[in-house]
Each structure stands twice: as structure tokens, then as C-alpha cells.
Image (cartoon, rainbow, N blue to C red; front, side, top):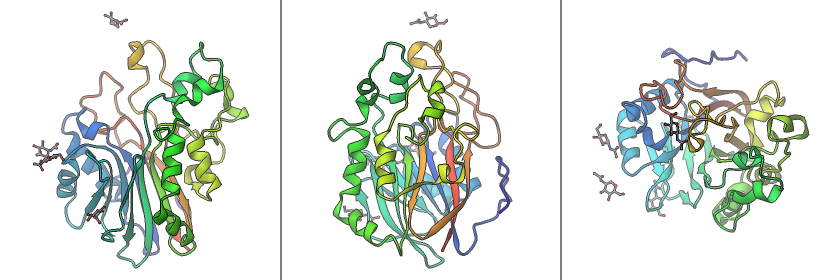
Length: 310
Ligand SMILES: *[C@@H]1O[C@H](CO)[C@@H](O)[C@H](O)[C@H]1NC(C)=O
Ligand SMILES: *[C@@H]1O[C@H](CO)[C@@H](O)[C@H](O)[C@H]1NC(C)=O
Ligand SMILES: *[C@@H]1O[C@H](CO)[C@@H](O)[C@H](O)[C@H]1NC(C)=O
Ligand SMILES: *[C@@H]1O[C@H](CO)[C@@H](O)[C@H](O)[C@H]1NC(C)=O
């Protein structure tokens, strides 16, 4: 299978009849940090041209703007909370009343125009107590300090995954996953246990960490698409954080920002992934504080992948 250039032109062809292209895209406070941010979000979605996109950092009323800009036949479903934060956009059909909302995101059943069905989640796990900051802090000497944001009851990133996996409807989706694939896409605000290994601990503050969110998904039969296609963490780190944060703003840009892979596309079911790309448009984004005119409107790389149905 031919590989795409990292920069995609308008002419990029649509996915095949028996395939699906999925994208996860944290839209950095709904585009408010760059000029014409919302238009640029829509533009980059159309350039990648996914069948379904998982959005994070979706503010109130922004989904409607985006679907209007994307045009027919794009539709959306948002998380059903006081403000959406996560949304799913698709150029296919969202099956009515199949949407699930949790603290961590929104899920729905989607019927592709090609006849295939999928179950799809857009997640944005809690951002507090970001593990890589603790791991890179020389004053931290215990694993539980690094895990502070992972296992906190209800709000931790691990429990947020547990909540989703234990929804009665999600359990039904899992039972049916031999026929209808499940995709879990999103910004986990945490790295993968597959990346923080003995082999890589030198670049992770000398820590090996079994990050629970990714581990729980693996234990439930979900596969991390990027690490399946690129098993070598050293040659293909797959960094998604960050396009613009190279130095940490909380420390007045004097300390390097840890760069990590925290945006994921997980799958379970009868599909085979054959390509995955971390995407930040065609122009190199300028780092903070020179980001305002960036063509690519996010502080995260988006990730998109192509799968064939079996
Ligand atoms: C925008 O969103 C808020 C909160 O959901 C809602 O109260 C308001 O009516 C919306 N405004 C428009 C113009 O849709
Ligand atoms: C939606 O788009 C309109 C027109 O560009 C803009 O005025 C409005 O602020 C946008 N809404 C939100 C919630 O950003
Ligand atoms: C999402 O679920 C709510 C009920 O929880 C329902 O009112 C709404 O219509 C659903 N949205 C879609 C797009 O199915
Ligand atoms: C951050 O850096 C700026 C510019 O060098 C300086 O003026 C400011 O005092 C610094 N702030 C802190 C809290 O160190």
C-alpha cells in the first residue's frame, strides 16, 4: 500500500468502498488561538477528508459552525453535558438515539453510506496532573506521584476509561464487535504504556510507566493503531503533543515541554489498518508565542488512519 506524503493536497482521493478513514483532532480551544481558527479547523478536516472525525475542546455552539462550514452531508453529535468538549463529525449517518455521553467523551453508532456499521467514540480524558510533567520533574521520586492523575476515583484517566467500558450499551457493542468494529479515538492527556518502556526510559525521566488508560483498552481487546503499524517506539515515536508547545508556558518557556504521543486511534473488530499519519497541515506551525498566524490551528497533531473492512 502506498504511503501518503505528510502534506496532503486538495487532490487527495477519497477512501475506497470497503475502507474507512478516521481522524482524531484536538481543536485547541475551538480554534480561538489562531486567526480564523474555526475556518482552519474545517479546512483541515476537508483536506484529510475522513469518514469520521473525533473532536476535542469543542466549545458551545462551535459544532454547528463547523458542520455549516463543512457543508452537506456532514452531521455531528456532541457530548450531552453542560458544554460539549467532545464531538463526533461524519459525512455518513449517525444512527439516532445511539449516542452515549460520559465524563470522558461521546460515543455513537454510525452507518456508512457503503453499508458498513461502526461504533465510534471521541474521548478527551482529564487534563489535570499531567503525568509526563511529574516524570520529568527531578523532585519526583515515587511512581504514585506520576500516577496522581491516572487513578483518582471517577475523575482519573483510568476510571474514565473504566466508566466507558462498563456502560451497558458499550458492553453490548463489545459483544457485537466481531461484526461491528469499535473505534475509540481521542486525546487521552496521557501517554501509552507501550511507549514508556525500559527501552525508552532515558527520554522519560528514567521512568517506565504502565499508563492505565491505554493498558485497560489493551486488556479489553482494543489495539493501538499507531503502535501496530509502527512497533518501534525509538524510530517512530509518533509525537502528537505538541505542534507549538516546545517550552513549557507554566515555567515561562524556560523548561522544555515533554513531547509525547497522547492522541490515539484504538480499534477492535473486523478491520485491518494499513496506514496512519500524524498530521499538522502543510506549513510548519510556529511555536508559542509565534503561533497566531499558523495555518494549522491546533497545539496537537491530528492523527488519521485508513482501515479496510474484512
Ligand atoms: C450557545 O450555547 C449556549 C450554551 O449551550 C446556549 O445557551 C445558547 O443558546 C447558544 N447560542 C446560540 C446562538 O446557539
Ligand atoms: C460561529 O461563526 C460565526 C461566524 O463566523 C461567529 O461570529 C461566531 O462567533 C461563531 N460561534 C462560536 C461559538 O464561535
Ligand atoms: C443523543 O441522546 C439524547 C438522549 O440522551 C437524545 O435526546 C438525542 O436525540 C441523541 N442525539 C442523537 C444525534 O442521536
Ligand atoms: C518570564 O520571562 C520574561 C521575559 O524574559 C520576564 O520579563 C519575566 O519576568 C519572567 N517571569 C517569570 C515569572 O520568571
